Length: 170
Image (tube, helix red, strand yellow):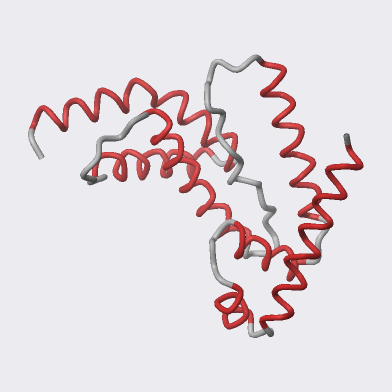
Protein backbone atom coordinates (compact mmCIF):
# COMPACT_ATOMS: atom_id res chain seq x y z
CA UNK A 1 0.00 0.00 0.00
CA UNK A 2 1.48 3.33 -0.98
CA UNK A 3 1.80 6.28 1.36
CA UNK A 4 -0.54 8.38 -0.80
CA UNK A 5 -3.22 5.62 -0.66
CA UNK A 6 -2.99 5.56 3.14
CA UNK A 7 -3.32 9.34 3.28
CA UNK A 8 -6.31 9.39 0.92
CA UNK A 9 -8.11 6.66 2.88
CA UNK A 10 -7.46 8.45 6.17
CA UNK A 11 -8.58 11.78 4.71
CA UNK A 12 -11.74 10.27 3.26
CA UNK A 13 -12.57 8.48 6.50
CA UNK A 14 -11.95 11.65 8.53
CA UNK A 15 -14.38 13.49 6.29
CA UNK A 16 -17.24 11.19 7.36
CA UNK A 17 -16.03 10.18 10.83
CA UNK A 18 -18.49 12.29 12.85
CA UNK A 19 -21.58 11.30 10.92
CA UNK A 20 -20.52 7.64 10.97
CA UNK A 21 -20.00 7.78 14.72
CA UNK A 22 -23.44 9.30 15.18
CA UNK A 23 -24.92 6.62 12.92
CA UNK A 24 -23.28 3.80 14.89
CA UNK A 25 -24.14 5.29 18.29
CA UNK A 26 -27.83 5.41 17.33
CA UNK A 27 -27.67 1.75 16.41
CA UNK A 28 -25.74 0.27 19.32
CA UNK A 29 -26.67 2.78 22.04
CA UNK A 30 -23.27 2.39 23.70
CA UNK A 31 -20.58 5.05 23.19
CA UNK A 32 -17.67 2.70 23.92
CA UNK A 33 -18.93 0.04 21.54
CA UNK A 34 -19.60 2.71 18.91
CA UNK A 35 -16.01 3.93 19.15
CA UNK A 36 -14.71 0.37 18.72
CA UNK A 37 -17.01 -0.24 15.77
CA UNK A 38 -15.86 2.99 14.15
CA UNK A 39 -12.23 1.90 14.46
CA UNK A 40 -13.06 -1.49 12.99
CA UNK A 41 -14.91 0.25 10.16
CA UNK A 42 -11.78 2.20 9.30
CA UNK A 43 -9.62 -0.93 9.41
CA UNK A 44 -11.96 -2.86 7.12
CA UNK A 45 -12.28 0.08 4.76
CA UNK A 46 -8.52 0.56 4.61
CA UNK A 47 -7.90 -3.16 4.16
CA UNK A 48 -10.53 -3.74 1.48
CA UNK A 49 -9.09 -5.25 -1.67
CA UNK A 50 -10.97 -5.72 -4.91
CA UNK A 51 -10.27 -5.67 -8.63
CA UNK A 52 -13.06 -3.18 -9.19
CA UNK A 53 -13.10 0.28 -7.62
CA UNK A 54 -15.64 1.17 -4.94
CA UNK A 55 -18.39 3.07 -6.74
CA UNK A 56 -19.72 4.93 -3.70
CA UNK A 57 -17.13 4.97 -0.89
CA UNK A 58 -19.44 6.79 1.53
CA UNK A 59 -22.18 4.20 1.13
CA UNK A 60 -19.54 1.48 1.42
CA UNK A 61 -18.37 2.97 4.74
CA UNK A 62 -21.95 3.02 5.99
CA UNK A 63 -22.50 -0.59 4.94
CA UNK A 64 -19.36 -1.67 6.83
CA UNK A 65 -20.48 0.27 9.91
CA UNK A 66 -24.01 -1.17 9.69
CA UNK A 67 -22.69 -4.72 9.38
CA UNK A 68 -20.32 -4.31 12.32
CA UNK A 69 -23.13 -2.77 14.38
CA UNK A 70 -25.38 -5.71 13.53
CA UNK A 71 -22.63 -8.14 14.54
CA UNK A 72 -22.26 -6.31 17.85
CA UNK A 73 -26.00 -6.39 18.51
CA UNK A 74 -26.33 -10.07 17.59
CA UNK A 75 -23.52 -10.91 19.98
CA UNK A 76 -25.15 -8.98 22.79
CA UNK A 77 -28.66 -10.16 21.91
CA UNK A 78 -27.77 -13.72 22.81
CA UNK A 79 -27.58 -12.64 26.44
CA UNK A 80 -31.19 -12.46 27.72
CA UNK A 81 -30.53 -9.45 29.92
CA UNK A 82 -29.80 -7.26 26.95
CA UNK A 83 -32.26 -6.06 24.32
CA UNK A 84 -31.85 -6.24 20.58
CA UNK A 85 -31.79 -3.35 18.19
CA UNK A 86 -32.80 -3.84 14.61
CA UNK A 87 -29.55 -3.04 12.89
CA UNK A 88 -29.88 -4.38 9.41
CA UNK A 89 -32.22 -1.73 8.11
CA UNK A 90 -31.66 -0.44 4.63
CA UNK A 91 -29.55 2.65 4.51
CA UNK A 92 -30.98 5.66 2.74
CA UNK A 93 -29.77 5.79 -0.84
CA UNK A 94 -29.40 9.54 -0.55
CA UNK A 95 -28.50 11.18 2.74
CA UNK A 96 -30.26 14.35 1.64
CA UNK A 97 -33.68 12.77 2.15
CA UNK A 98 -36.29 14.99 3.64
CA UNK A 99 -36.60 14.73 7.43
CA UNK A 100 -40.16 13.41 7.19
CA UNK A 101 -38.99 10.40 5.20
CA UNK A 102 -36.27 9.67 7.72
CA UNK A 103 -38.76 9.93 10.59
CA UNK A 104 -41.19 7.61 8.77
CA UNK A 105 -38.43 5.07 8.20
CA UNK A 106 -37.39 5.22 11.85
CA UNK A 107 -41.01 4.72 12.94
CA UNK A 108 -41.32 1.71 10.66
CA UNK A 109 -38.11 0.26 12.11
CA UNK A 110 -39.44 0.84 15.62
CA UNK A 111 -42.64 -1.04 14.73
CA UNK A 112 -40.63 -3.90 13.28
CA UNK A 113 -38.42 -3.97 16.37
CA UNK A 114 -41.55 -4.16 18.54
CA UNK A 115 -42.94 -6.99 16.41
CA UNK A 116 -39.70 -8.95 16.73
CA UNK A 117 -39.71 -8.48 20.49
CA UNK A 118 -43.22 -9.97 20.64
CA UNK A 119 -41.94 -13.26 19.22
CA UNK A 120 -40.83 -16.07 21.49
CA UNK A 121 -37.07 -15.98 22.15
CA UNK A 122 -36.46 -19.12 20.07
CA UNK A 123 -38.58 -17.90 17.16
CA UNK A 124 -36.82 -14.53 17.22
CA UNK A 125 -33.38 -16.16 17.31
CA UNK A 126 -34.25 -18.45 14.41
CA UNK A 127 -35.49 -15.48 12.39
CA UNK A 128 -32.37 -13.42 13.13
CA UNK A 129 -30.04 -16.29 12.30
CA UNK A 130 -31.85 -16.76 9.02
CA UNK A 131 -32.41 -13.19 7.88
CA UNK A 132 -29.51 -11.31 9.43
CA UNK A 133 -26.78 -13.93 9.75
CA UNK A 134 -27.70 -15.65 6.49
CA UNK A 135 -27.56 -19.17 7.90
CA UNK A 136 -29.37 -21.95 6.07
CA UNK A 137 -32.25 -23.76 7.70
CA UNK A 138 -30.06 -26.82 8.20
CA UNK A 139 -27.30 -24.76 9.85
CA UNK A 140 -29.79 -23.15 12.22
CA UNK A 141 -31.31 -26.52 13.07
CA UNK A 142 -27.88 -27.95 13.93
CA UNK A 143 -26.88 -24.87 15.92
CA UNK A 144 -30.07 -24.81 17.99
CA UNK A 145 -30.53 -28.59 18.12
CA UNK A 146 -34.00 -28.51 16.55
CA UNK A 147 -35.43 -29.99 13.36
CA UNK A 148 -35.23 -28.25 10.01
CA UNK A 149 -39.02 -28.24 9.75
CA UNK A 150 -39.20 -26.48 13.14
CA UNK A 151 -36.86 -23.81 11.80
CA UNK A 152 -38.99 -23.37 8.68
CA UNK A 153 -42.21 -23.12 10.70
CA UNK A 154 -40.71 -20.50 13.00
CA UNK A 155 -39.44 -18.40 10.10
CA UNK A 156 -42.90 -18.44 8.52
CA UNK A 157 -44.46 -17.57 11.88
CA UNK A 158 -42.04 -14.66 12.38
CA UNK A 159 -42.65 -13.31 8.88
CA UNK A 160 -46.43 -13.51 9.30
CA UNK A 161 -46.29 -11.84 12.68
CA UNK A 162 -44.09 -8.97 11.44
CA UNK A 163 -46.25 -8.48 8.37
CA UNK A 164 -49.46 -8.39 10.42
CA UNK A 165 -47.91 -6.06 12.98
CA UNK A 166 -46.73 -3.62 10.32
CA UNK A 167 -50.10 -3.68 8.55
CA UNK A 168 -51.99 -3.06 11.78
CA UNK A 169 -49.85 -0.02 12.60
CA UNK A 170 -50.40 1.77 9.28
